[in-house]
Image (cartoon, rainbow, N blue to C red; front, top):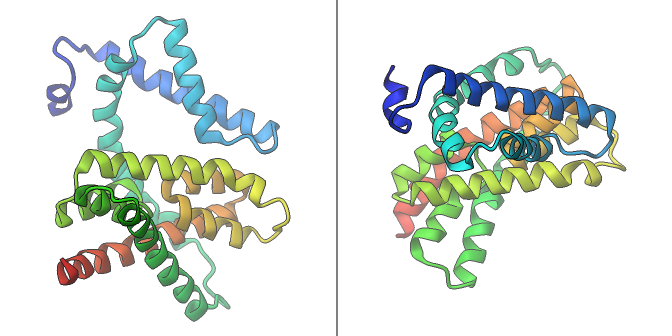
Amino acid sequence: MDLFKLMPEGTTLFTVFAAFLLTLVAHTLARILSKRISGLPMVITALVLVLLFLFIFDWDYDHYYAVAKPVFDHLLGYVTVLLAIPLATMNLKGLPIKKLSIIVIIASLVGALLPMGLAYALSLSHDTILAFATRSVTTPIGLSVAEIIKAPLALANLIIIVSGLLGGAVAKPMFRNISDDRAKGLALGLAAHAFGTVEAWQISHTAGRYAAFGLAVNGLVTAVWVPIFLAAVL
């Protein structure tokens, strides 16, 4: 398999299966715990469980990461495409398309320009400012945009992951006084992309579908205007 070329030398099929199974078990347990314990963010819980399992089995994190990363990077593209399924099941009848479009456009602009502006105000490097342009979109789209605008891929990937984790973690406490699952889902999809969408599905199917809608449309809009905007101003 071509994936084995991306892994450490001597990696066996058993090692790949072990890394996949460890991640899957951590995700499943985190999902169960997040449903039973109110306010517990599923993604962060899964990360903590992965680290706990690695400690118990005395498995070096760098080696686990090197084995698991190519597998999940390969699957990530398929998962992003599969977001079309919940989008297709959405009931668009009576949906305020114009208002929703305005929300998505504003979220796309703010999601890219605000972190870039803060990076500029803090006198960060040119490459870092460009990397922050990808903050509000999911990883496959963000890395494609980063490649187009010539931002460092590793830094863009880190920014996307951290922003998604933070967004997913603080969402539930912020939603205590919000009862509309559509608003919760859309906010999570726009602000925390894939991580937020995962958390939204834990709330309800309605929240999950709206999060998927926000993630997909925001990613499409951002992927179009960011490269054009930066090419015009730089």
